[in-house]
Length: 365
Image 1 (tube, one colour):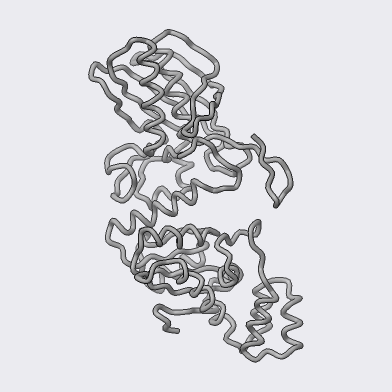
Image 2: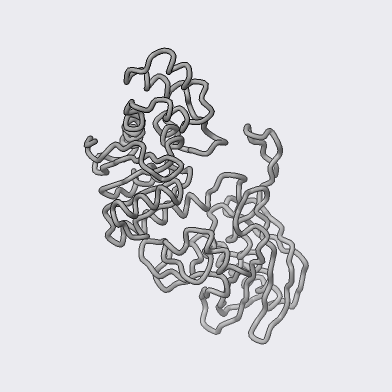
């Protein structure tokens, strides 16, 4: 499957989620255990009905059951788990039903607010359902009436998890097994967006009333120092301002601070919700027009329109409260999305992490 994107006009390859990989390896291990059949690939049905084939790194019997593994192929998506070995260990049990366990590299949930209860392995609901359905079908085919104990693991998962939001979500000991469709679409960043949404849910359920959504480490440091916010209240939104605002529309939290570099905040002020350079551009004409509203003459406006960067345009407008004006515009864009009970403020910073603009809560400046 090779969709084309308007950014590159090059064919990009779809991949598969960790949940799909876990389903495939669980089925292969169960089939090996129940039928004695060992294969070098396995077919599964994805949640939307597509069939997918997974090559197996191994499929073998063990002292306690059987195990199988596959190398995760995320296609052309820059997924941190691309190339990771995902494996499943399956054992039979006399009692019917399915029991899931976290193997090496898969985390355990320690905080409320996630779709999995505290104490459970971080295997999300859709992968759990996929595994359960495929193993149930295999049990019927093999005339097996007992249950299964399924352990999912990811090689080097502890190290990989440090590159994700899992530590802030209260997922300890490794990665989450994710996926709602089974397919990874290139540059959709669906796993990252899901982590942002889960981080907001965890904060809300644990009583946090003020969160700060930050585009990077510098803006996060500003919010940490200025407000003394705990890690749970700091949301790493990256370029996905829209993911934060749209999720708060469904699950509001009383106070939201949005913080980021001046360029990214100017994109939000212009109405862009995805702040990545692939999807939105700095609008120097807009900056010049807003500077004009603050008193910039024609010569300054012309110079700003040909600036190399938004930061340069801001420096050219030194003496004008352009940073504050852009932050107010960004706040207005955010307020148009979130419900009325969410108060919003916006901070813009320069490359040194220093504030260059602020629009406060409830219209305060």
